[in-house]
Length: 126
Image (cartoon, rainbow, N blue to C red; front, side, top):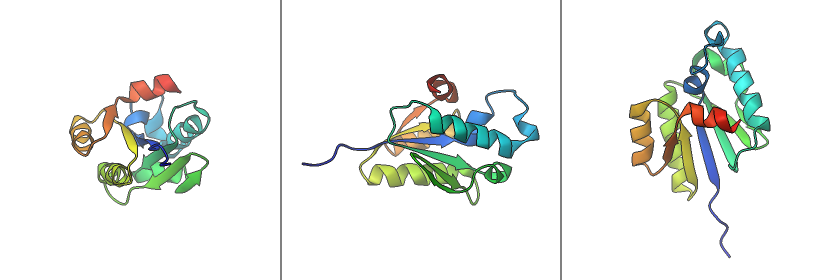
């Protein structure tokens, strides 16, 4: 019997962190770490969460897997890595939801077969 598809959540960390005016711009690494910690303990319906970090935020969380959260460091633009992670998960037969407020990125991932939700939707889940 085939396994049901895994539910994968791909998180545009910069976009999520940027929605709260809590001083994140003074400590991007710390903001990324706080988001990672929230994702670790949040009660979500996803089998895997992919946290995409770029720029200075990469200093807050090492790349790799922590339980159900896998952190990836974008070499260049975070959007490119988000699209890549989304396409790879869809190609593997997974159901993918991407968290971003970036309308262009939403269009790209939806075109690849993913669902796109807002950062506020994710924060409400946490």
